[in-house]
Length: 171
Image 1: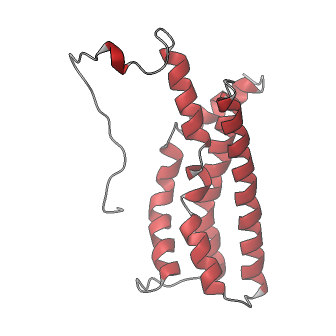
Image 2: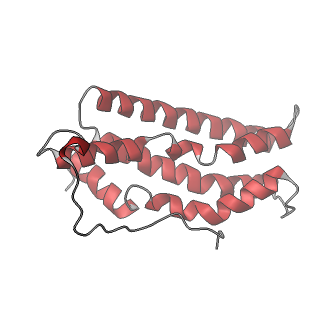
């Protein structure tokens, strides 16, 4: 639907990897993988994949936007800033050698909800047409098509919510 594909499954059979290519510590593969997942789940792509749309909205709104557009810009900026702070605190935990699996999962869940909701919120307020020469309309259309896939990156919502529930002692 988006005229490209983003997800792949790759299998390597009968592959020998030289000892010098070891990543991390021998026997600690699971910890290495979970640390990588924590970084992926809490990274800036959780709130920046839609940043171009946010910038285009600000540009289209101009210096004197109407009240609804100004309110939307303020709400999106506050949410994006909160996600940035959550992402940075999770990265700090990773850098300190801690396992922020629950925190990373919260960032992923909130970030995915934000990025999937942003195009719908912009469309509801701005009501853009589908003119490809208009940056806002072009970006809005692309994100309306692509944003459902954002919740697949780094684990499905069901997996992420299970990790959060377990971390909160609810499972």
